Image (tube, rainbow over all chains, first blue to last red; front, top):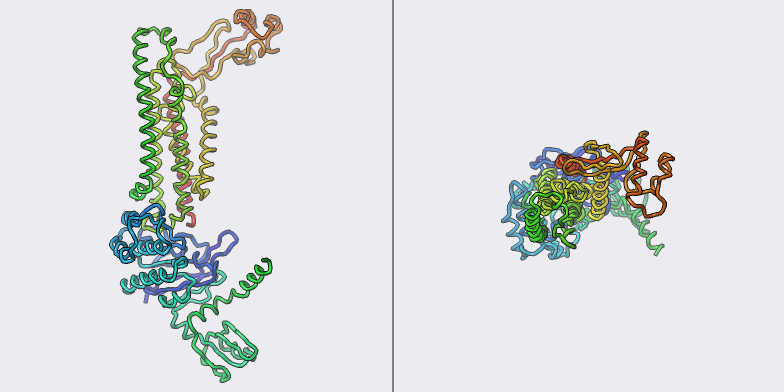
Length: 300
Length: 327
């Protein structure tokens, strides 16, 4: 399987602030990749670097056989949808369809019209007057109408209610199915359950670094939850990588990345869920976040 | 791309067109009245220039200043169209939409800025053409097309001003990323530069012609002229500008002439003649520095060129920023 995205030590600094550090990820063609991480982890930065909207300060990115660049050929392959759902608020959906037709070499206007008709979103109403969910649907339909080979979506469902979210993700899944492996998607979101439903790949960023990257099934198989008596975890840590330890008075729950079979019979081995995996790795930052919350509480 | 520009600006373009049409209607009505009056004056005077100079054109009250409303057109164009051109798209994040289509940012800016610069030039050109036509009789009679206000509103310079104001708005909006500061920059920058250039630079595009003559005589340049300065100058180069009267002559005069100075605030012209004769005896001469009327179009060309070059520099900066900046 060929790769759609391959980055090596990709970094972006804004002045002194590091938004993304030494990011090395690979996404195979045809994958639907979840991009997760706490706020400020660098998700938006990574997506904008991949789309060619921002320029890296270090490292390299190869997106669909080339570095992201301002070139009509490259731009035509990328469908980028920013978090703020950028549309011309005073224009109608039909206006946007016309603009797209004038600005893209292969433009599927009927795709937008069909999808919006299915969703009963008026074409002749200013998009500024549509609901947030409808606007997101219009923007997604317009992004898909470019017929891109890579779709980069930055928290597109963040502002949507559960039903609108479901419609949005259904549209996305349908597009991926239609493309039959010709469409790669990277989708950032905080909604882990949604991601589990539509994604087969995962990139997890925390504190501007990649914590986890790979096929979700493989990652789940590599990790186990060990439940056992509260005791020294050093023997386990010698062979396996302990990602997270939760201890109560009597027992310890360890989330480990396996490097072979677990021999200690004192531990009961359980499969890890997607959500547990994501939260455990995001927890790298949790201590700091917890302190922050406490401080806020004390002040108020 | 052009379609996007058309969709974005068609409403504003229609308003601008309506305002221009209204301005044109007023100018045409008044201009035809002036023109017919001018023809009757020509018939009465039959080529007698003294007679012509005594006549008054029928441009009265507000209407006589109305054409000079056109002086603010370039600034308006720069404020309302130039400043938001890039800045508003950045503010409303629509650049994320436009720059993610299969069109490079360079092409996006070429088409957008190109059409808007053309529109600015058209607006500047249209009002300038109207005002130039309207001023025809007045220019012929009072020979003052070279005067600062007339020069600024006629000919081709308004095109240069409008293109520059538009470019300044676009560049300021691109640098500031916000419309409001860009508007402030256009207002301050455009008005400031216009004043500096018209007051300090324009008189020196070509070295002025200076005529020297007897203090007791007078001097009239051949044809029309833009007067820069007039007065008296001594053998050693001391300059006394005209219009200071006896009060301003001070102690730069030779002692023998100072004695002749009339006292009191109101001074008759005749009583100054003795002073002038005395000064002349001590080597003082009268001088007039002016730009001959024949240089009018050269000056128009030079000034338009300056503004167009500045506009080109601003647009070049805008391109460099838009191409390199992270969106």
